[in-house]
Length: 75
Image 1 (cartoon, rainbow, N blue to C red):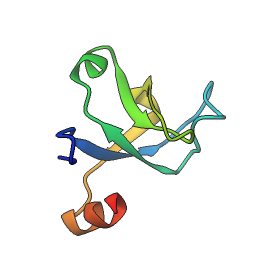
Image 2: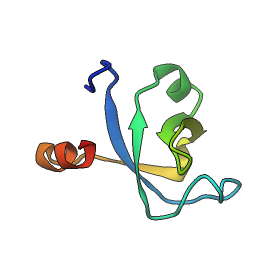
Image 3: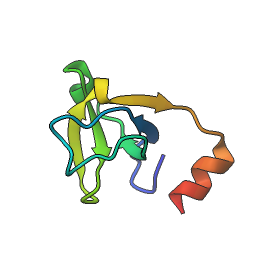
Image 4: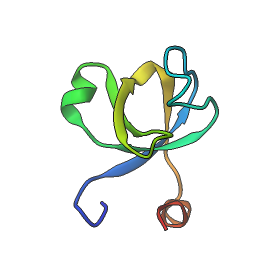
């Protein structure tokens, strides 16, 4: 959990069709848990603008990173 109590995870972008300005293929993105969005096949991602936005889940592969790697990416 982050300082705000929001669970953040990571996902690898597999495609950006329709979102070429917002997403870069093969880039690692921080995600924010959003059960309502997930129920609709979407994922909340911090995109290239630095804002959290919704994208189709099919564009990403969720990753489980070791805690040490997560801590380094978060700092």
